Each structure stands twice: as structure tokens, then as C-alpha cells.
Image (tube, rainbow, N blue to C red; front, side, top):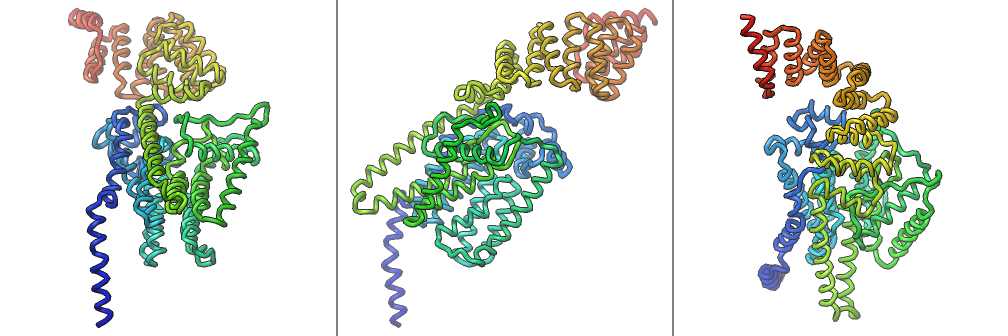
Length: 613
């Protein structure tokens, strides 16, 4: 009876505080989560009005035939062409294309929804780590407002990072639930989410060490049982690593030639850079150029960064004697970015990326917020509680404002690459991609200016010469176009495209013999070059070789049956050969394809047909 009475008393005492908490919005978990979601939406709302960019969005979405239908065959083709493609990104792009075609708002909205899911999972993960509502709220809020996290959401092609982060956070959440409640099903669910994270992004391979960091924070003893517990995660990561390396080998991916020590120096710089930007996120860009060797040597400043990296690591280790918090935050950051900071040799134009920090910063943000929370509980700082809280709110406001402005950088290709050039004025990739966008917008003088800048930075880049030649050609500056194509041909003498392009420029400038020579070369290098056959036929017709021209038009149509231009040109060839019935048949076919026939030609053709009758 005594025990029953105590239970009733316990319920009676604990009941009123619960009612008070529910009536106080600042102590309401749903309200605080809702507030972080609202903040995320306001900050990243500009992305919903953004276009696709020509930084891989064109390759993976706009001009990607594989996303037009969800099938194993299409995914296989996508993976063959782009090893390492994220299964979930591919499926989501295919669904969006099916529902909305190429409406960029729909694609950006999906990224924003995935970000919101990550925000909710971050809140829950941090709450399980510390069991303190306001620490969870402020940690999540800083995660939401940090400008370096904009890229993962604003860049459509970067969607794999959102999927990966969501699945990693779910893995953490169920792992902690397993540790706290010792229910085997939570362990299996955690392992399942880890498998999904690996399918999303190879960077998830670092998750097994991250689980050890959680164990470290919870003061779990490092013994055989703990190691065996991580073995399934480790095996899955190793299998993915083997598969990734085999794909790289089969696809003949080249890598930058750097010694192991060179890579350590580069990785140190990348690590310190990412760490520094957490606390001082200025001069952010979508592209940070790789550090280049000077006279065969790595730049001397890298040695300073190597020293800083060692120093930071030493301080984090030393702090463990007093608190595990700093060790956890630093270790979480280090383990997350370690696979991404160029220790492993890769062929890449950039050294680091903001999206790498999307989850990596989480440990350090938690460390800072939790540390501030513990600080204001001490006697010395208790009276400064409101001041510290005020500084935190001001900082959140400033970061939110910066993030909202940075989100607008991703509005289109022009604003994106212009931002890169503001920070790094000599980046070839930025000039080249902005020039391609200007060319697509038919702003050819601006395109030529940027291609020229790209050539000045890297005169051995084939695409810059070839594409500037294309812009000159459309500006009817055929001599300059031909000169650029000649420069491009010296860089890639076996590329049929450059001979085709120069042949067009020569033809438009009236140099039919030179045009014919180049088009012959293009077809020699690529026997199924449809456009080359079609244009060689045009040149042959202009030279009066209508029978040979007819053969080229036949070949062009054989290779591409819906080639409306080839039907028009063949109709004209038939006309010149006085085969008027065949000419009319091709003219009608071209018209049925939506092609516009020349009125004078059609009038002359009908006169000839009527005269023969």
C-alpha cells in the first residue's frame, strides 16, 4: 500500500510542470522545430526562383536523356556514363521530370524539402545527445543559418549530399536509441539507414568512426564488444570503397600527380580552411581552385597550414582531460571531412567545397552551443546569461542575412560564376562556364570576352578556343573563327568536332575547297557524323557535284531519320538533278517535321512539276 501511495504522489507532483511547459511555446519542442523550419524556408526562399546552372545541372538534368524514364536500363546507362551516380538523386530527378519536365522551381523545391527533413533530424539527433531542448534548438538554428550550408541546398546536382546527410542522421538517431534502450531492432534500423546513406554518397564511408565519436561522448568503454558492434558498418564501408576504386580503374579516371606528403600538405590546408570558415564564413564561393605546384614544388604557405592542423588536433586531444565535448566536436568534424580533403588522389579542379561542411560542422556547432550553455550555469557567468543569449541571437541574425544573400548567388550561371571571379579573379573554369552561358543567351561579345580571359589563364584548354570560334562564327567573324578552330585543332588533332566547325566557318566565308577538306577529315575521324555528311553535301552542291551531294544527304538521313534539314537539302539536290517528284516528296516530309520550306524554291518546284505534266 505504501508503494502505491508513493506512485500516486509522484504523478501528482510531476503533472503541473508538464502543463506549464506545454503552455510555454519556448519550451515546446514542436514549436521550436517549427521555428527552425520557418527560418530555413525564409533564408533559402530565393532558390525557388533560381534557374538550372551550367555547373553539372545541364549534364545531369537538362541534357540528360536517362532521367526521362525511370528504369533499370536507364540507371545502368547513367551509371556507365557517370560512375558514382547517386541512386536516390537519379530516381528523384526522373520523378520530377515525369511530373514537371524541366521546371527548375520543382527541382529546387525538392532540395528545400530534403533540407527541411535534415533540419528536423538534426534537432532530434542533438536532443538525443544532450537531452536539452534549448541546446538542440540553438544548435539546429546555427546549422540552418550558416552560409556554408547554402550550397548543398541551392545546387540541384548536389542533392546527393542532402540524401546522404538525412540517412546519416537517421543512422545516428537509431544508433543512440539502440545504445539507450538496448533494443536490437534499433541497431538493425540504424544499419539499414547506413546502407541508404552509402547509396546516396560515398562520403558516408566515414560514418563508422563517427559512431565511435558518439560512444566517446557517452563515455562508453572502448573494448572488443564496442569494436565488434561497428564491424557491420565497417564492412559495408569497405565494400563500397572497393567498388568505388574498381569503377575508377575501369573508367580510366586520371589523377593529379602528387606525392603522399604533397597530399598531406594539401589536405591540411583544406582541413584548416573548412574549420576556419565555420567561425568566419566570408568570401564564400561555389568553387575553390586547387593549389598548384610552382616550379615543381608545393607553395611554402602550405607548411603553415600543416602546422596549424597539427596544433588544432593537439589542442583537441589535450582538452579531453577536462571535457569530452571539444574532442567530440573536433573529432566529428575531422572524421566527416577526412575522405573529402584530397588525401586520396583524385582528378579535380577544386580543392574543397562548402557542401562538404553540411554535416561536418554539426559537431563543432553543438560543442560551442553546449559549451556556452554550461558556461552560463556557472557562478561567474550566470549574471551574463541574457548578454550571451543576446549576442547569440544577433549572430544568428547576421548569419541568416548573409545566407539569404548568398542563396541569390545561385540564381543562374552568370551570378554563380561572377561570384567565383569576385573572390578568385584568375579561375579558368569560371570564365569558361560564364562564357558558355553568355553564348547560350546569344550575348556573343560578352562570351568572346570571357573565352579570351579563359584562354589567357589556360592557353592549352581546347574548349575555350573551340567555343570562342563558335561565338565568332555566329558573329559572322569567320576569319577569327577559323583561326580559333585551327588553334583548337593543334591541341586535339584527333577531335572530329573541330574540323567540322572549321569546315562550317570556311564554307560560310566562301572557301569551299578548304571547307570540303575539313569536312572530309571530320568524317574520316567519325564515320557516323550526321551533321558532317549533311554539310559536306551542301558544299558539294555549291560546287555543282549534285550526285555526290545526294549520296551525303542519303547517308545523313540514314543515320538520323528525323533530320529535317537533310530532307530539305536532299529536296534541293533532287531539284538540281531534275528529279522533281522526289524533291516534292522530301519537301513534304520536311514540312511534316515542322521545317519551313523556302517559298521561292517551292514555287519553282511546282512550276517544273506542272510543266512536266
